[in-house]
Length: 270
Image (cartoon, rainbow, N blue to C red; front, side, top):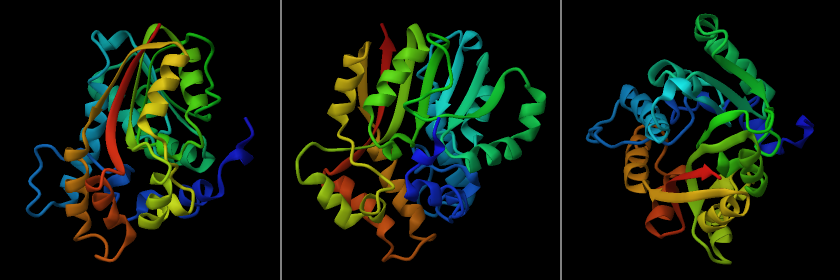
């Protein structure tokens, strides 16, 4: 894989800038969190970490029992904490974290060194991209991705590669923020949110992704909006973490205006 394909904003954000160190992403996870059941009156750093762990649990519960038999890959694993959580709490047979950024793979191996030593044959981190996954055809029982697909330049290759590496009956679970359809949505998001303006995040309409999954051999494609358990909690935490004028506070407004929403997408390989 040609790692020079990493977009400049992605390379910088997850390289020298190391997004995990930003105050809004406490604990090394890099997602907006799933805040159901968390008291939002005065959320703590511990609550923030819990919200991010809960988002992983929300995704991983979509894989069927017995999970001890399933080999999974996480696409866009970042620092790899979610992959380690998947192995530790859900007891999958094996989990491989995949990321396009070599700095993130290096960090994942360092941060999770103890888990790697404990489970040398069950946990791994490796370079790869969403449209060029480092697995043979039909090797995996499951593929998951947590708040990474918004960075993929296009989702067609991700759908195609997920279908290739999954066995028949294998399961794909993706959660991230998708955009509403419409010719002006992307431009409106660029005005509201710097991450869309500078190309870090890409406007991916949900319907386009689900249509791509069907096209490449998935069935039972389902979507569930979880925005009500993401955006208000994330924004409430930001009130104490970033200035009121910071552009990230506009995610809540974008959600309320119907421009963007957070979804869990599941699909089964035919």
